[in-house]
Image (cartoon, rainbow, N blue to C red; front, side, top):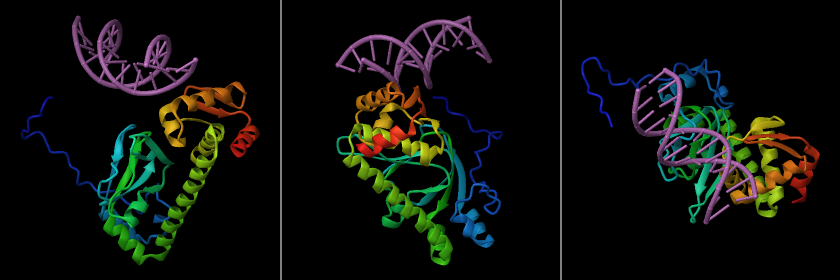
Length: 243
DNA sequence: CCATTAATTTAGT
DNA sequence: ACTAAATTAATGG
């Protein structure tokens, strides 16, 4: 390990740079779009922008929620580790969403862990200013409520199907989930390994790949490494419904 | 800087 | 669980 010597030419990196402007932000959330100019300036004063690399841990479950993380770009996985140390992915979070809202309102501790699936850019927003805005601006609060509720509905449906369906149905659901909700495309690249794919739907890695190759052999999917294409959507939906 | 090799991670059976 | 393939890190020039 090389330790850089501090001399007069070496500046300590300047982390004080604040977010440039929230008013002109091109990556605003629906909620932030309801804020007035002076409120956005308040947010700016209490925010910092940073980036994470693919694979980076962003939040550990159990840590305190001092800041809300707003995801400006990239994909993030939200997960927990069960008693058996097995990972369960709760959902894949895509851009323009706030991470950990249920933890903010339900507790002061993050109940879930977050890790970057791709390179990611974020803004940290102080929870105090966030709370303040919710109290002060009903439209903002309403939008936040909408996103939390949608999240909740989505996740319950996913977990329902997971607990009731067999392996093929779960895999089909996951593929449809990626195609419709995350990527909004017929074909896409899985943002993670087979292990993680299995962790998302509560299967073993072996079962997950077995089902994927079967779906490929049956001509329902095209699979090349992490690239997945839906060839026969009708059948896929059939499988999803059937179990 | 690039090339080679070693080590780790991932996929498939 | 094991093997092969792929990706990433370390090494040497």
